[in-house]
Image (cartoon, rainbow, N blue to C red):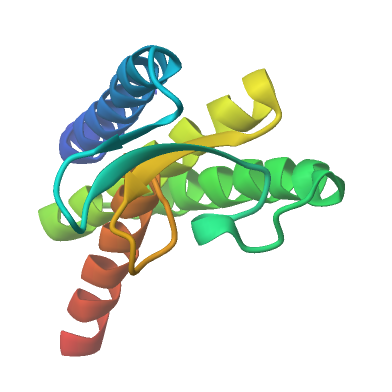
Length: 151
């Protein structure tokens, strides 16, 4: 099967989102282990280590949902990759937004499989604690729907 060159942006975005997510989590965990699990950056931003067993922003945070979330994550990743491969050509915009979603989903999925929870650490004090994978997923979904609604 010939490699579909038009997937370059999707694959690059997915990889970079995953890489950045995992690197920042690793760095933050090492940094916060030297403290009480919290570093104040400003009056409205801190790094706070949270072990999130739930889904985005801590919803359904319990051990019982873990296997469901893992299975759902695999299905979502498979569906997106299958859909993008079925298209003869996808716009760069869609490749980028779907790449953010897949990269972020894989980042959180790896945490969930390795640790049994997702590492969250960005704390704006007025919003639930989250990580870059959550941000990538949210931004990807928003970008995708903005483009979809414009069409």
